[in-house]
Image (cartoon, rainbow, N blue to C red; front, side, top):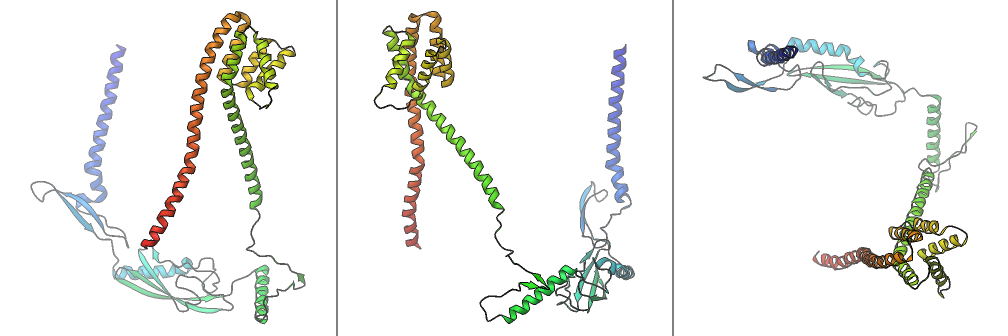
Length: 407
């Protein structure tokens, strides 16, 4: 029972949604646009005064047996003569307030004026003309330093379609109000100009070392700033840290390569000595003794780690723990495997150890062969860049003379 009620309620809600969407579509499609644009009465809205012509795509019913699509061009609205005159006078009544900018009035102008070329709210263009363009430009910019009052006439030519009107605005330019510091700077510049005129025959200009009772000193405003030096110091420190880190990584990589290269020799010697009947510990000590007594001793990471392990055992560290630490210090899979084999030897005995070491020797030499192949490929890649550079230089030596001879 309750399920049928829920289904009925859901159906009603769905039906209401469909009905509302259809009504909204019909209203927007057939009623709303006609009422908004006045098309039901055959009216099209124009652009306002000063606007641009526009085109409308209309579907016309009644021209023929079926609806026709027609493009209609609509011109913007224009003023009548009376409307244009009224708008012109309204604009000029408010023009002073519009153009004075930071000045209090046009009778006391010391800052640039804001002369608009188009008035959006009226759709009217404005052309400006100055009677003294060397003092006040047609853009409203004061072109020269004003030392005394100067009278200028601005002419505003207003254009609205085919109608135009000319108006004149008297403007009084006055010296710009300066602070005491600005006046002092101005007078000092004038003094320096006077000294420059007097000292033209000398190789240098002697600036005043005292002015109005105060000692002066000078420095070039274009002098190179040294603020970048601390930044360079920080950058250099970062580069040194990165260089040190890169150096450590290179040393670590070289150590790992040497460990891998030494591994077959270490395992094979250990396998031979254990196979001859020596215990692992004695074989380990024999290998360290041979390493230390070599006539030309070369530091080899694998034997250095073995020596540390040997002295750990001599100082009382358990043999299994010493082998385990050896593998962890080397941090490479072959050495971890070897340390695990030696540690397990403490439990399983020497017979099984010989077989495991024999297999490990075979794997070690296969590993060394693959490593040598990889190192050779890396060396070839490193040599490729100098070869390409050499090829580029040779091509330059060949092409440049050829191109010059063609030219």
